[in-house]
Length: 456
Ligand code: FUB
Image (cartoon, rainbow, N blue to C red):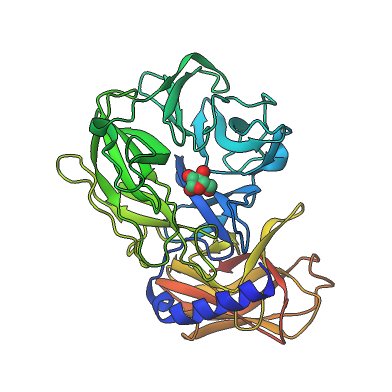
């Protein structure tokens, strides 16, 4: 993020400080612009795959896909860039909305890209043995190229093992994937976009047959199949249809999220998941400073299904997750890029240490929510790298100006990539707190921060 964006970001964060002291949650990521969220639960962890909007974009100028993870729904760990355009030799531009799924020990990430040969958008699939990559284009060519609107793939595996891929704008298509997940059998089917299945559109009604726009998200709950999608025209809202099978016939149900009036982007994009007994809708808006139609940010809302299985109207909020689903253990190594809320920071990737926190200026801070200190902590360790001396990490509770329980003096470690583990004593902290690392020093680029840990 450039200096101007950073100043805007700081202004935004100051405005939101009052809220962030308590419970601000949305947008989930404050270090960059993110879009098109696609959640995946694997073992104990929820992984969120997103696209990345470039700063000051005036189009969907997207090069990388990102991944974030959580085990509590309030702190998100930046897992970097597991997949980018560079991974597809045939891709030219437009790293748009995808979805990742697990099957037989491997992760399959379906993504649309614009082909370098000028043939338009097509859908590729990248494979990894880890949810955070690295991912590889194992087929070395598009999996799907069927027309002029092959974007926004959604993948789903039914109880009988049959996998389906849905996608498209302006059309909606699906195909049955083979068990290898990198090929398909049978015809590509075009879903009829009629009034019964997808309602009618009120804007540009002459241009398209129904409210369906793009961004399908397919899943099953209690024998009913749900298809969520961006509906419109533009600006988009989120709506859904249901069916007795994964292939329809679809019956239109309702709007899920209305057009977001403030902090809106003209697109929206649904991703729905159940995690640790609760249901969550992921979407995007334009709520970060400098945000808008091409500089979007992913958000999440918790919701409960209605008794009859219908999805209620879900509001776009700032403080979505009032209660997380777990506490964070500070006595295990925690990546510094595990963040509930931050002010002014960025993350970077390094081959030696992976993702780390950088661009730390005087006054920046990281909030980590619901940290369980149990019977007490005595010392604090952090892995840092600095080219200057005299900086400090103030360890505070409750807010960026809350009680200080320790100061870690960050000395010159020999450079911004020369990592050292530094320690300090902390006042006995007990119980569950929101933890704040407030960074102090002379000016900008004080140091880099890789991980932290308390000792009992
Ligand atoms: O992010 C680029 C495009 O915008 C996606 O493919 C659509 O779903 C819309 O969100």
